[in-house]
Length: 421
Image 1 (spheres, rainbow, N blue to C red):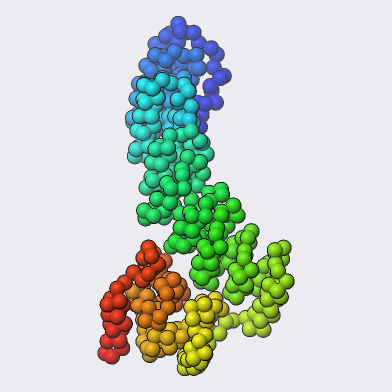
Image 2: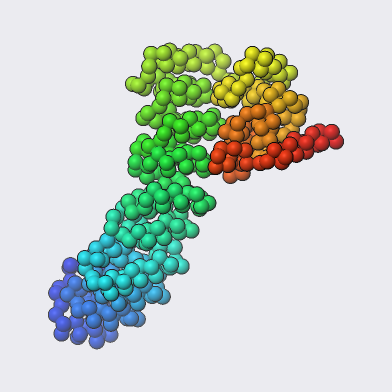
């Protein structure tokens, strides 16, 4: 935040020491203000004015680059919010050059004033600090990290998105520690976001953050990460356009997109210059199929018909994870529910009851009983059971089911008992 006093700096007539002393004795605030805004005022004079009863004069002292550090430390605890705001803007602006302008003792006092402002109860003071240093290098790492961990997004957001001082390890640690809402979205917008950070965000629960990640053309997203995003993408239309517009897409990713995005977006895929001939032909077929049958047959057929189809494909060995993911991409959730019933050897109404309960433990247990991996359970929780993202059960570090076999058997038995009542 730039104080209006900064507009006066450089315009005031030079003041010698005697003039300053004379003006200090004046009862008129405008006279003392001339000294407070002067670049010629002696440090001891500005220090004296740091305790002036007029807030506008203390603001001028806070904004003045010539104010001594000892005065800044006093102003950092000033009772007037606007004084601390102006001081925050100045100190943050000068922070990268403190080591060039001061000795160790004065540098320590400057950082003490800065730390006092970081702990300020007025959010706007901390916000000004963050907005001022967000693009600067040379700011002390611990200062930027404390701003990045602030409980208010207006404070943390600017440095999370822009600061070159924060390392990938810093940002990854922040993402893993249940950050405030919006943290992942801010990080997702960083220029040249690393593949590791993109993976954490792309496989996370914040839908807006994934959207921001996909819109960030400079983000380095691995094919593995994009594949995991594609598995969840059919249920999040906000992801479709940015996925289609990603600068680098594999041939398989383009084909998968064509299964569920709108016709106009398939047309947009057809305009890509990196298309192979066979992929272009597949896209044309997808357009024609969508025109002929614009609505997927997800739940239009009776479940008995789905069961018959699933049993036949299971007998042919065509009911594996890849096949079920493809069906989900086409919107055939009813068929996939029937397929789980067949693979798990459970009654279809029981599968419906488990999934309609929106129980993450129930959905995970059902996928386990069906002999499918935990990675499919992730998608089943959101696409079939409609479990809210923040409640989704995640795999263990090794990628295994997070529940014991005993616990998953108990879940199935629990729903069986409910059916029997």
